[in-house]
Image 1 (spheres, rainbow, N blue to C red):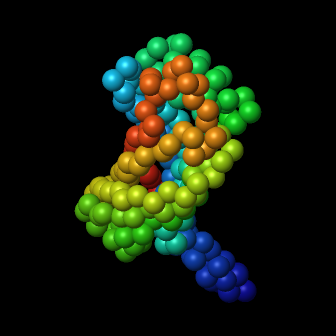
Image 2 (tube, rainbow, N blue to C red):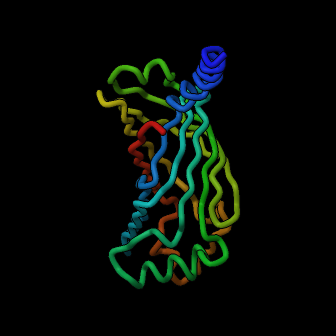
Length: 184
């Protein structure tokens, strides 16, 4: 009887363990943005990005605390949080989408894979579609380094830039995403 129970448990638990092997995550991903103008360059870095990626379905999700972005100048950080991002009202940004171009089977061997990323980006309470190309590098130890770049227009997300500082902020902000995923 115990043998039958043990076999039943193994039969039920095995699919769960296989599913878990195809899920990757991080809590210390890196997202940076860069605004370049002739008047001033502005760069923000956030090393506390949480992300989960299901390699079987391709589903990917990010959560980014706005106040975790750091700047070279404290005044830039203050203006970013209070005047532009209104981080007390909109404390996080999110991305929910899908990665295509890599399969769970390809994760079993080291290599570099060009991928496509498509989904919905919510910043400042406004959701907009994003579509970009990226790269996933599978290491021998099974970890995955993912990266992609894309542009965001602040106005598309309801972020108001006052006329007197408009020349200090680029019309399109370059966003760089770098994740080091490990199996969950």
